[in-house]
Length: 69
Image (cartoon, rainbow, N blue to C red; front, side, top):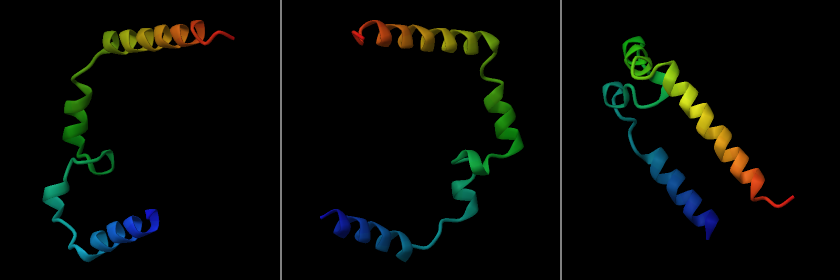
């Protein structure tokens, strides 16, 4: 079953024509423009990073606390 689905997905993927570059521009990190990177990085500052790290530490602490080992 998996093999049939896998082959059908690959077949459809290879049968289609690639979309134009303008349609997929800035869709993934691999093709971001310098302007889009600048806009993306201007949306957060050091406080957001500190809060994110704090939340991660709290989540890890809770996971370890309720792990029971």
